Image (cartoon, rainbow, N blue to C red; front, side):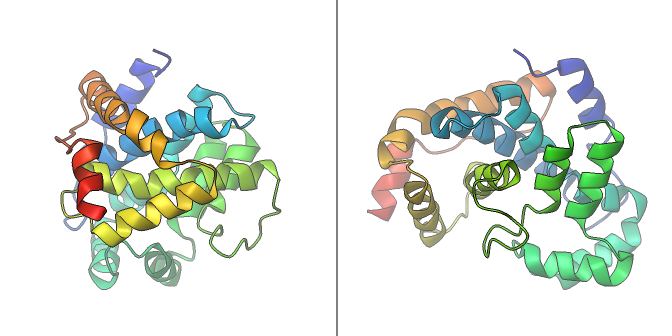
Length: 223
């Protein structure tokens, strides 16, 4: 399959629980795997210069800095998570920098560099939340391409992993996808298959997943 089961199982099985009370370890891996599967599939649609294994790995690891903070500083990170609004990465980043002098994106990039992943992946992860204002990113650059690729999977992973995703949030995903040339036909043809792949790979890697409504039912609610 190209998912490097041995390495991924070692990474996940050794970090699927821990002492940080405010950090949901199982949800972290479920979202990470959803983002990886989504990134791999979307990469085939937008046709970047990167291959499927590369985009899968990037999606899986791009938030690994959060897990590292939770593992190394469980009490401090629990306090940060309590002070941060859920699903607000900018506030979480701000609070991390206050306490640690570094945020989870920067930490993830440093970890990936230690694992000898290509610089371009490390730079994209470091800048992954710069895409909204295009700060520190040059349009058309490889880093810009990778950061743009991560944006939609990051949001769609919420739809896959949580039953309470708001309809306005889903509409915003569709609008952003449309701006990247990904029409509703992609979701009609691919969404259910992507969910099935996420569930299958979850079984393969011992990562928890959940049942997700078929796309036709989700879309019916937002029309």
